[in-house]
Image (cartoon, rainbow over all chains, first blue to last red; front, side, top):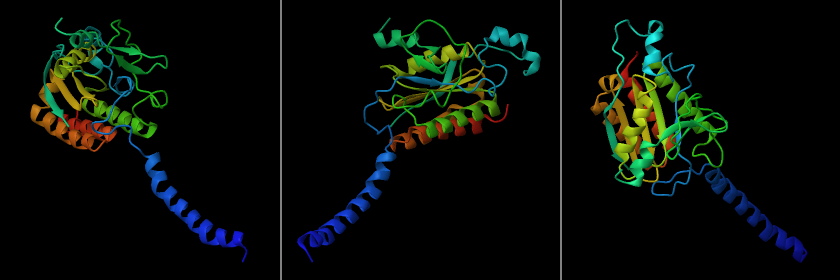
Length: 94
Length: 165
């Protein structure tokens, strides 16, 4: 065996196997890295998500006054349509 | 005005970005809320917090929860200022102008803080005890770095508790 063949077999093949295993292990992790880590930074723009209007019921994106006009399509007659003020909920930290 | 954060919080408003998707910019005061919709494709990307698959899950949970219960579920992810509760309640005020029973889930990943705000009909149908339980479940996911999973879990729990409209 020439020196080139020896090198290829005893260095090249183990190195190739090592790289393959390393790619399998770390490649998946790199592809699935979460964009948020607790305590990490958060540089994204604020986002505010709302449900699709066509699925969320007829009252979506209408002020209470406009809701009154179309109340027959959904709400019971005589229902009090007050403007909700924040009165409950929960807070938390992690 | 007590602080700059409170001022910006009260100015928080819905507006539509260039893709027509609903986002919030705490520094925008003008009111443009015609196209309130989540859009998976335009809301995902390198500068967006969620991947398309995560966004699809949030979108589905949000839409399902709102459709089942008749409440307006809404999810905010971003800065909440020093008084996070006041900021969240100011944002809730914006929502209550559009729907009689909104529910706001406000999450600030940078501050590791989460606020669930209910009011009116939504407060009657979602007791604070249930909201605390949902917050607990969400905190568990968030502490593991799973923002989208926590949001979906919270939405499901709150919607289950609220029941069918």
